[in-house]
Image (cartoon, rainbow, N blue to C red; front, side, top):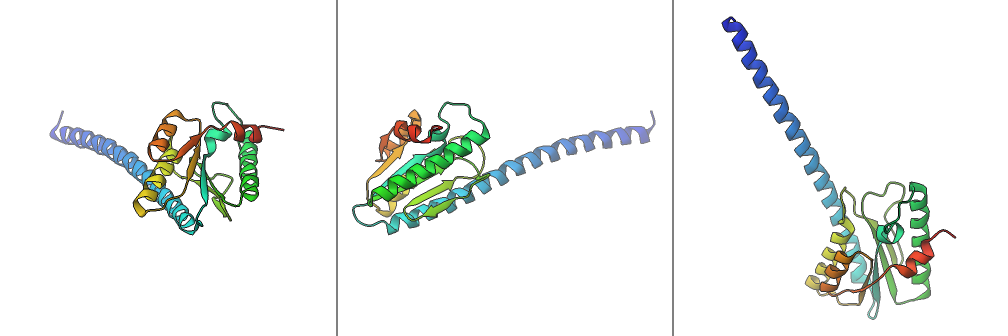
Length: 190
């Protein structure tokens, strides 16, 4: 083996090390970008909900719905069935808000809106937390409940979910919690 061969092998070994480091850095960068996008979406949705809360009249009540918990629960559904149940949930909440002048509602879904957009329609807000991973809607709602305390917004809040951990967190932050049974019945296929 000549000195040139040794140098070439050393350079190739170093190149392989650099390629591994580059791949690791690219993966880390992708994770950081996803986290940043999720936080940006989380922050935007939180600001919109905070503006809604500031405009709520005295005596108003807010019902926050854990969207996918109602739509999916523990069922395995096709994408088409999820879309249909999500649409029925939004329609059912719109009916409830229209029937009760003191009720405001916020349906929060984990993840990006793939075929639906965040919307605000009078006293009903439908929002998507963005990003990837589990429990983003739960975290968003808990952050919102904390924010309400910090800025001094006081009105009754009910969280609709069957998620045991989320129920405990929401109750600890002062929200009343009720199960999804009534909404599940309205979102089931007719």
